[in-house]
Image (cartoon, rainbow, N blue to C red):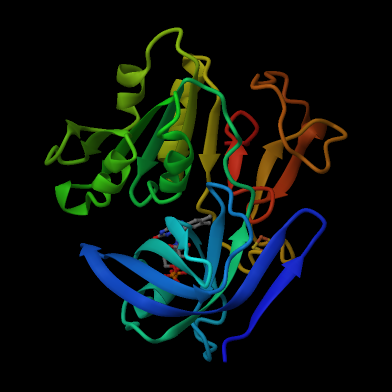
Length: 293
Ligand SMILES: Cc1cc2nc3c(=O)[nH]c(=O)nc-3n(C[C@H](O)[C@H](O)[C@H](O)COP(=O)(O)OP(=O)(O)OC[C@H]3O[C@@H](n4cnc5c(N)ncnc54)[C@H](O)[C@@H]3O)c2cc1C
Ligand code: FES
């Protein structure tokens, strides 16, 4: 019998339990899609929130690891959760060996997610495996009046995955590869200025390696556009307890509970306004103008 608990807070509900692997298939070099079946339904998930997955009944690795929620579907009795992952270390390499019928522990949903937006153009900028938090966002906005674009950069054509999932939602996909084997030859952030239409209200969302996020932010700032970034900071508890995932942010003096300030950079950078935020509960999505890069 699988154990399942709802951990309730004043602001969020998190479900913890075990799910059964339906499939765990290789999509590309070092890249896998995991489908987990979870009994019953999940608390409401905001696009950009994440799941912690832990290998059960073992102490090595002891801790879970955070992954973007790629896709979720429910039929009233059970929920199908999809995660796309790269094998980079201990947990993900072992996870790649898991087969259908085996179980995984999960905590879901965690973190804040992307802010609601009324922008006419939603520009999602992804590097590496950074497209994973955007499918649920595109599901929400891709079929509305908004124009939805995915700028997706990888090392080479062999690493390009899941493009059809986005196209089916009406997302306009632009590829960039480091070696020029597909799409634009160069950095994905170079595409931002090409795709942006001057005067159109545009929201930039980014996920990927930190140098790429910074580069996207620099361009957003030059174009005077709002920009949110989803960080892939290493985590331990994922629940706000250990403070192992803090990042430095620029905060208003009395702003201890966070959320948004105007998208203007304070050039004076008053030291008293620098504070730490936990990526697992205050993030992983941050206003790029607030981060101390
Ligand atoms: C909110 C969030 C969402 C994420 N979503 C996804 C996703 O959808 N798909 C996916 O493949 N990965 C995702 N990640 C990254 C994923 O959590 C790490 O790849 C994973 O923790 C690696 O665990 P491991 O035990 O295999 O590697 P470890 O043995 O822990 O580390 C192996 C090597 O990778 C480095 N490393 C580990 N984690 C990171 C990281 N986050 N950034 C940079 N280097 C790292 C380590 O320094 C080490 O060199 C996400 C991270 C966060 C915070
Ligand atoms: S991972 Fe423990 S506080 Fe964020």
